Image (cartoon, rainbow, N blue to C red):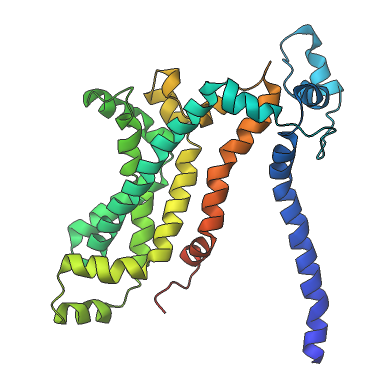
Length: 296
């Protein structure tokens, strides 16, 4: 009992510090959502200087005047959402562009990565070690390093300025292969051998044994891949010339002068898929990135 009482102040202190950091991390999200219900006039009066041009003679106000951060609008209105969803079809077009790019990349990358991870786990040899080492090297490289080769290959395949120029490099990304291989290696060999004795082939072992045991890792990789490609910028800018084909992540950076009020509403809509995916797969994400997997 004495030890518990002695440790109680430390627990309270750590909890308090965690709450403070959580508040700081949540502050931008809460600010974006609440401010998306402000009118255009109120947003301009509070944040106009943030979007002011620094190239003109009045650019000094960008530094000289203070920005009024407000969490509660003077008058709640859905004007910005009406403009985004009803009066500006470009925003919805870019949103669905993002969905069309990211969902196939996430699904097929995880599927191919699971098959590759099973191969790396079950089959031995120097060639496997060399290929897996190449995967690690590619994973450590920033995407900017491989952007020029991706551009040249896309041009050679005649898929430049098409969705395939975004899909193919994303589907073949090595990140998920590395992650799933590490988890699949935790499956005891005894389980695989028992399935083989029962007459299970490689495909049945993969589907009925390996996939259920690494379910947490699969969902974790899917969440990380989705978030990564939902925020992609370099790929569509280089590989797609048509602005109508750009995802919403590119379009967000262009919302500034004359459309400051729409920025909050579009940003709030932009966060919805990530938040829903996180809340839906929170348990799997924690399980997938923890040192203890579902193999216990």
